[in-house]
Length: 108
Length: 120
Image (tube, rainbow over all chains, first blue to last red; front, side, top):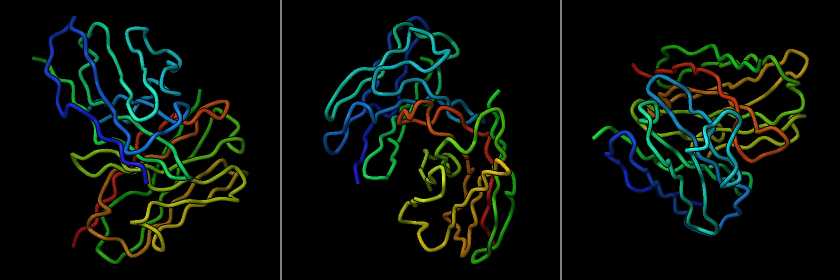
């Protein structure tokens, strides 16, 4: 089973700053199989990025994804107030899906 | 508009059973693989189960194998999760989710979730 490790656990930033979130896989995965989600309290997750770098429908272009192999990154270019939330990466492999433990982006 | 609506959650004693449903609308349900994902209180997301379009293939996380059963009824646009021998650690919000459009490896729509509490 592939384990996804997200870092940092918490990122404290101010609106307008750039956020860089990391997701590291325990073994190499296809970029096609790596996704990112945003979750706010009391809400289901929302798909942001799929295929490591493709934005989902309706997602603002301040969100971008990159990476390959074992190292993937979600970047939020300029944090808006509504971006403070928890972010999860997800991967698929051998009929199993796993999520990272999440990175919380909170207001500094 | 795509909608997924879970129901059936509640309070159950350890060792008990509960059945969840997910009603789908706004898309051709029979064309999409479907998933159950859970989230324990204050914790992260955990994939629970997958089911392919024709139910030919069904997969489970190891911790629920032999206790949970996923099924679907394409005529009724419904997804189900039968949970038996429930444990305290199964307490979570259970979400149903749809595979991404065009076969993308992601979950593009999620329900609001239903809370399952296992406690004596």
